[in-house]
Image 1 (tube, rainbow, N blue to C red):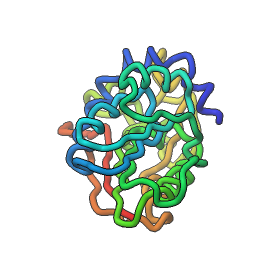
Image 2 (cartoon, rainbow, N blue to C red):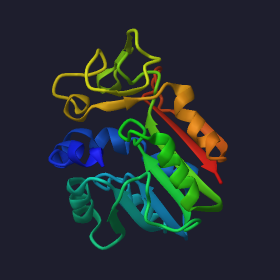
Image 3 (spheres, rainbow, N blue to C red):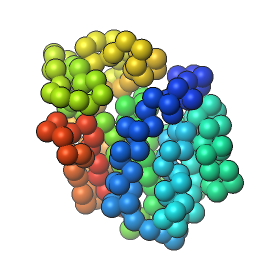
Image 4 (tube, helix red, strand yellow):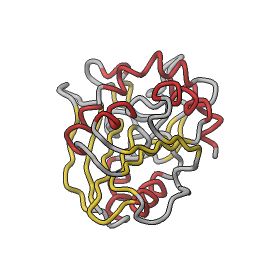
Length: 223
């Protein structure tokens, strides 16, 4: 439940400062998930930036987040278009095999137990259902890398193998999100392994974006 305190109080700032960067990954949902119908879970939905597109694609959407402040903005964004529930991503209040699809965007750098999140996503996903994920590139974001605004060439330092939560280091810029809420760093192998441990089949993996140093990774795994 720690994440609640981290994002409560800065949800509006997050929308103002980071919505453009977050929405740059919306094509992942369109390409790797596609259209409904069916029940889709947006896991760690935050302020609901991706909920409108999921609804446009014909999904019956449920959004889950631990932050009341972020869910408040998500409700303003989509009204009654989706069910929004405050819950821990590692202890979801849904039965097994409840959803036809699961989406999670930019959550592995926020949650303390990403493996638990992936296990829960797999548990509530129907056989054959897709889990679509996009998040920050572990090689170029973390305590070891100064890559402000995902512009230019990242400045790399020692510490890539450091696993866990951090709130200082070369990768933390003054006044930025990581200074405000901290972040969790998982090297690439530690990021991918939870999908395999949950017995999901990895169908697609990409370094997302056209830049020489892509700021995001994206994947589709299937149960």
